[in-house]
Image (cartoon, rainbow, N blue to C red; front, side, top):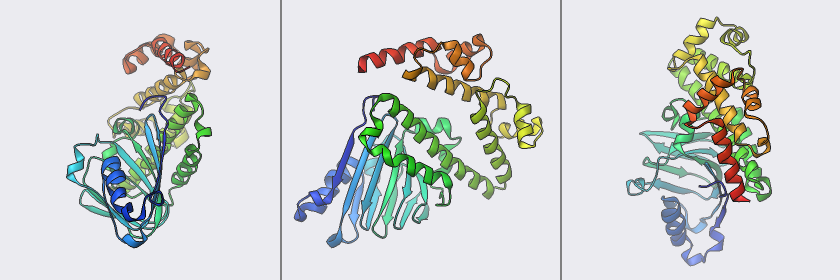
Amino acid sequence: MDATDFSTVRFATTDLPEKDRIALWREQYGRLSMKLDMEPLDEAQFECSVVARTLPGVQMMLTAMSPVRITRTREFLAENNGDLIFIINQTGSVTAHARGRDLVLRAGDALLMNTSEVKIFDRHSHGGSLSFRIPRSVLSEIVADVDDVVMQLIPQETEVLKMLAGYAAPLFNDIALGTPEFRRAAVNHLHDLVALALGATHDAVGLANGRGVSAARLRTAKAYIIENSNRCDLSIGSVAAHLGLTPRNLQRLFEGEGTTFSEFLLTQRLSRAHRMLTEPRLAQSAVGAIAYDAGFGDLSYFNRSFKRRYGATPRAIRNEMTKAEHLQN
C-alpha cells in the first residue's frame, strides 16, 4: 500500500444473481479475495455486505452478514504475511476459535487475531463487525509483546473501543480523507487507538498473572510520559512524583519490560519529531524548532539519536517527504 492508495471496495450478495449467489460469494469474495472458506449456516436466508477501505498501514472493513462459519485453513496460510486483524463485534454473537481456545464475543467485544494462523469464526446470528488489518511490524513497535494479546478478549466496557469505532466511522467517507496529510494523520490515530485497546488487554493479562498493579502503574506512567514528552524538564523524578512513586520504583517498572525510563522517553520524543518532520503543514518549520517542540534541549544529541534510530538525518527525512509531496502533486 503506497501513500496515494485509499481505495474503497463495496460488495453485497444482493448484487449477485440469486441462483449463483452463494457459489460466487464463497469463491470470489471468500477464497480469492479474503483467502477464507465461508459456509453459510442458513443458505435460504444468506446475506452479506462488505465495505473495505485501504489506507497506507491499515485496512478497515465493515461487514454485515447472516449466520456463517468462516475458516482460514492451512491451504491459505502460505498466502498471508502475518498481518494482525483487530475485530470489534458490533452486533450479534460470534465465537472465535484459534490457538486451542474458544472466545465468545458479545455485541461490543473485541479481540486481536493473526492472519497467518488456522482459525474458525462462527457468527451465530445476523450481525456486523468492524475490523482493522494492520501490519505486524507496525503493532509490534507500539504494543509490547503483541503476540501475548492475540486471542485475548477485550470486553465491551473498554472505553477506547467506543472511541475507536466512533473515530473510524467517518473515514469510510471520501471527503474525510481528501488530502495525504489527513490520511497519514488518520492512520496514526487508528494505530494509537488500537494500541490503547490492546494495552487494556495487557493489564488484564497482568492481573491474571498477579502483576496487575504494576502493569496498571506502568501503563499510567507511559500515558503521562507520552502526553508530556514535549516538556524539556520532564524527568524520572517528576513522573514518579506525579504517580506517587519513588524514582527507583518507577525505574523498576520499566526494567520489568526490559527497558528504561530514559529509553522510553527518548523513543516518544523521536517518534514525535519524526511525525512532525513528515507533516506537510510543518514543512517550513526549522529542524531545530521541531527538535525543541519534541522535548529536546540539545540539537546535537537530537541529531545523533535520530540518525541512530531512523538511519537518516532529520533533514534527509524532511527532504524525502518534500520530494514525495512534489511527485504526488
